[in-house]
Image 1 (cartoon, rainbow, N blue to C red):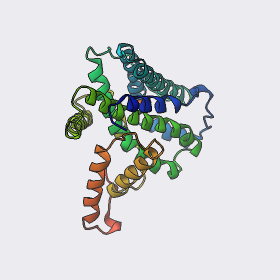
Image 2 (spheres, helix red, strand yellow):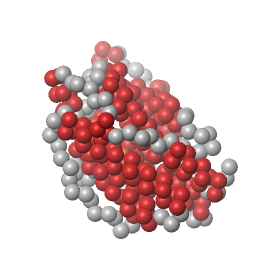
Image 3 (tube, rainbow, N blue to C red):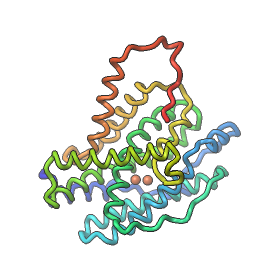
Image 4 (cartoon, helix red, strand yellow):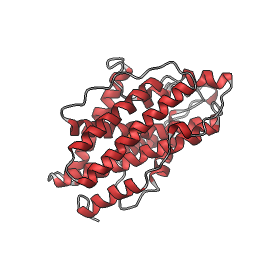
Length: 286
Ligand SMILES: [Fe+2]
Ligand SMILES: [Fe+2]
């Protein structure tokens, strides 16, 4: 199937629409937490960032959908907007239900260059979700929170994987139809935008963009205080990315850039001489 063709568009839009899950956050089986678990949940630093990021994404995507002429693309982008708004409702419900001290800020103004904002958001999602896949898999068996909690969030993480697949196919479709579809040009577009996503996230670490709504996965890394080496973390991110991406139609594109970089980094780390395990400190992923 030719990337950028009508058949490609139909495939990535229809598979996205057909795999939409129906659920309401308020009706999910939220587990009862004991005092220690509640403390742990309330101590996770990313709820406010996650709530505001998802809420702003919902507004931005719904506004962008209204500007899209193609009805099939418009419906798919509107559906993603609805799912991002539902993520924000889900986090708001969790915050209220478990008494987490955080708040929803007024929505960010809708950017004038809204397609560019969608592109920036899409690459940011690809960046954050790749690491979120790994963090989720590492945190789940740790017993820090009831497994039911992870059962609730697993489909949400899959929704982000679905958004990534939709996004990379949408970008490729758009670039081809703008005459910029050569693989080298598409790779350059990815490199440029991933570099931007990384720069934004490094800035938010340095506090230069406090409250910018960027990089909440990264801000949550420090909350996983279980023993973790960079090698383990990277290999888990790679495995989980491969697993979550494996369910999509093989004719669809998947995000390639970050998994490739991570695999290269993992290969290099594996070659490094190992220190005596008794002297290895838990790395600071942040
Ligand atoms: Fe989301
Ligand atoms: Fe998303």
